[in-house]
Length: 614
Image 1 (cartoon, rainbow, N blue to C red):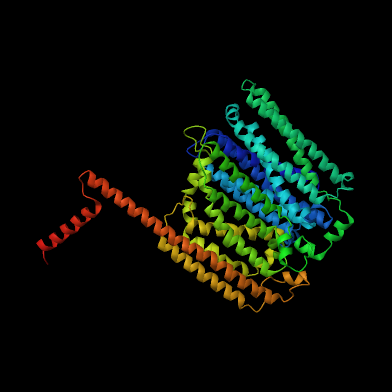
Image 2 (cartoon, rainbow, N blue to C red):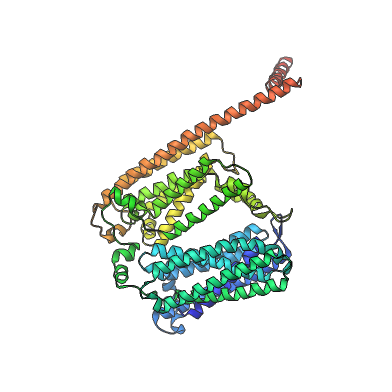
């Protein structure tokens, strides 16, 4: 695809991101409702999203014309176009983008409160980011590092550029109120863009000869523009610290910064259509059938030392872990600066869970999970059963509620108020239903492994990331509902929690037995295609995965069952102490306690029965 077409494709979506970001985070709102200025920006965001959806269709036609090596009229054949969309991974990405665009249009059009704008912003970001998994790095070696770094690079740059766009289009009064808030986001974005861009260049570029190529030249230009953007940000912060600077000067600086950002995005579109030069070793590696399928070369037969020492970073998951770790540490630091305490045990639980997730995705377990079902199941159990318990016990929602900023005015919810609203929303009430949490936690096992879905997801890096995130989030939701210490919109009786845990244990055991009883492979030919030289009995390895799932699946649930009993006893003890305190207060004031009142009530009923016998 021509770079000019690629750049044209990015303009409306990044503009929509900027406008939605301005509505959701920069402009004032009253009790979550959109202001009149927000309504104007919403209409403009709706138009840009409509344009982008049209460009998605146009881009798919141009892409097909490039593949066919013909003209646009050749690509307008309906049968050929539909076959391209439904049978190729690139075509399915266009379908996904179109559906996300339509969903974003629906959300924006119906939005009356800021919450809907957040969902619309997330939808547009997904539409922008998901195709990265099918970009040039997806077909190269070490694509876990290349794709993940590009994912966060594009996400941070889009929010950064979009934020500047939002600041330019809003009113001067709103800009003066919002620029300090944006500068904090810009700092995070700048760090992410710099680090992810450097990692991506390292992953894709042959450093000996690559800098003399067109790709290297574009990378150098982007680096220079990035430094310029950092300097603009520094100048803007100095401008902000000097309260006497004129609004015109501030706006001119923003517009210049926006122009440099647009140029940077244009270079990114050019870079995405330019193949990176590779060394001879890199070319041989990329042509390896195993690398083409998995993204990494075949490891040697697993041993304890190799599992402990192996590390191939999956930058998508690793970037997510770094982000939540940075936010958690920031929250703890904010509390300490304020003079408040945060339990050390919660921080330790969080750190252990982060380490476990990294080990199961980028460490030895994650590496061998690409090549053997038993190691995949071991990683699944760590992500879905063990790591979520630590995250739940680290109480991230409580930490966020104690550290997120309040609204800028008494009428504005702010980030903290928005989080409280989300916790108590109808959506959260539905999601924390223990039956639904159980269905996502255990029911998804049968949907994934007993259907062709597992084999299809194993074929791509995006599928691996999707499975890993699903395991982690479904496990977190389940244990949050059962043993969570964070605020919960539902008060679930302990007896119900125990019943759900016994049900989870039974369902998991049934799934493991079903896996142990299989006579055919569930991977759709994925592991056969790898032709691994070790552990060649694939069906026995699948049965071993069932045994691992049974063992590691039952132990965490049993621990959660014990924890639920302990919580039940503690709650009963607290309730007994509360009743005793109430009785003591009543006795001190010469009043009857609740038990005496209840006994008197029963005596009254008995006397009534005696006075009016049947």
